[in-house]
Length: 237
Image (spheres, rainbow, N blue to C red):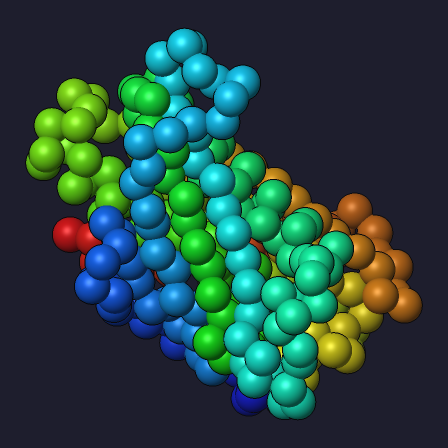
């Protein structure tokens, strides 16, 4: 039995509230159960130096966690003067994931920055960030099309992410904190809406697993992402 009482293939409740902030070109508050992440998309008339003159844009991500997003207060990284390795890893993951479904040439010489700020953490903050960032990106690109800043839609398909793991010997979907902190193995899958894999991260945390174990986690991830894609479509339509 999972601590939450969920079935092994059961997601937490997914909610996506769009237009959560006033000024960003695209924004949403996404919740996977008690994990809540504010995702905003900002359109900028600048691109990285190495892209100048190439006629294409850039999509990048930033990630942070509020000091009291967790059970105990964590110090602000700005106060420490540097980002943690975990933060930098997640930022790169968000950027890679979103770029995998965007035609950067159709974006023109624009940069879209996806800011993902964790308001409350209960496991799966990176996967909620990616899933919410796509919604914010979709809304921002819609704004660009409406304003005729670009002539073609650069977003090729949806992208979503979900965590899976082996808890008490059983593969389970969408780990919350109680499961994540006690899992024998955990994995994060980033999938596109056409069924392809953008990224897969799987790690043994004291319990190794065989090929079939990995495939069972992958099958769970497809179940979870199908539900996220449905929630994303509902949010932006």
